[in-house]
Amino acid sequence: MTVALPASSARRGLGIDLSKPVLIAFAVILFLLIAMPLSWLVLYAFSSKTGAFTLDNFHRLLTDAAYLDPLLTTFALAILTALICCIVAAPMGWLVARTDMPLRRTVRLLVTASFVTPPFLGAIAWELLAAPNSGLLNQLYRELTGAEQGGHLFNIYSFTGLVFVISCYTFPYVFVLVANALDRTPGDLEDASAILGGKAWDTARRVTIPLALPSIVAGALVAFLQAMTLFGSPAILAMPAGFHTMTTKIWSLFQFPPQPELAAAASLPLLILTIVLLRAEHMVLGRRGYSVVGGKNSEPRIVRLGRWRWVMLTAAMLVLMCPVFLPYFALLNASFSKVASHLVSINNFTLHNLHFVFYELSATKLALRNTFILGTLAATAGTVLALVIAYVHTRQAVRGYRLLGFLATAPVAIPGIVLGVGLFFTYTRPPFVLYGTLWILLIAFVTLSMPAAYQQLQSAFKAVHPELEDASRILGATRLRALWQITAPLLRTSVIATWCFIFVGVIRELSAAIMLFTSETKVLSVLIYDLNESGDLAAIAVLGLLMLVLTFGIVALANSLKFGGARRLSAP
Image (cartoon, rainbow, N blue to C red):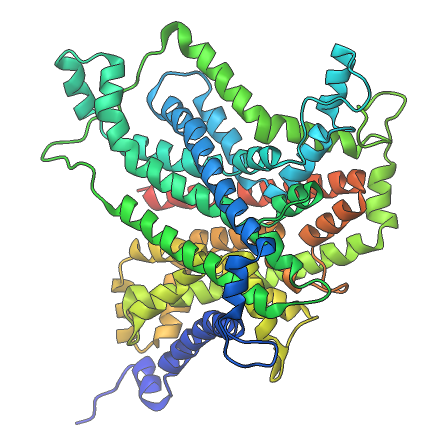
């Protein structure tokens, strides 16, 4: 007796299932993306100019003041930034999450605006506001006080100015962690404290603050890490002031005469410290500060501020003046003023800056074209790679899936400037000579975007039960076909959101791009940095506003898709 098999089963029996080789190929690609640049970085760090093994590079870093001073400056910068961020952001997080302060949702949105503003663009905006001679705020100070020319209230080209600007664009990390932690914390313990006679301050000191403390500590570690690894803001504000941080010093070691071995040696401490800090953050956030036994969690307890409601709102808005209102005003003013450092009026209003940027500045079209090409390619390649790796890890599709999950999140521990150094060493020699092409920038952007893309898609996979995939495979589909035709469409909104956020990351990225670009591969962020070097602040303002419009537009699109998809999934 013969049994007729389904057509799909017959095809499965006769065809070749390439799923496992393809999945393994993706795993190899991921491994090479991370292992190759780090391997060359370590090799150069322990090599002399002749290629011999040596420890002299590290000896010079620790004994020569030209290298030791930037290291100490970086530590001081990071510590002060972390402290300021916690002092400012933790109370704001509490006000938004646990009080009846008006316009709490608006405050959250404005913090998001400062979060997505590139720090190097914020530094340039504060140049327009607080440069000693030409800054708008210093001009206003001289006008109001009658101070002589050259007198100033603010000097952004200083260590204090650098700490201030970096804090403006780092405090959102602490704010988000604290606000989210307080949003999730049930009000049972605070209610119990109030029932037992505890006053509002006693309850905050003994209950609320201890519950939020792990998030505050984790936020401080993230703020420390961000301040330590930033390149753009120190390059714009510190170097004109005559001092270096570690990132700017690494960049300077590639200028004439180049010292790549020292640059590699200087990069390793940043890499190691980043890994340690991220591990510490994971340990802090992984601790359980409390557990609720039985019953339904109560809603967070809202503190009534009474007459202080509007005072607290005013204080929050004054904080947001620094990262949002004043910088955006400065960029908008410079875009339409004949002189970037003068306030726009009827007499000096102009559209020439827009015409110059889009029609006369030849580098604009090149930078925009390269940015959109790299953004599209990096977003597509990064999303596909993250999708496959998240699938492999979640569904345990191949051996070593845990290692793949580790590799996918590993780039979060690689500062952009360090990755740029490693890629420079890797792709400036045979067999892969990619320096001077867009390919090396594409590799950098895909690598840097991998952790966030992987985490987002892994969470999405966990929300999709594998039964549909199993049914598809029973009917003869391969793993890849099931992923493409069944699972990926179910994750459509998450995939599109991931694509959008990678594209935004490409627009913002400067640290790696500054190490890898050439005259023909400039992107928008590098063009803005170059224009700052030449002092063309009006053109920078126009390009900066364009960058912000693109960034906010794509973020809004991604959020609308994300929440729209969530509503569709929850609908009956």
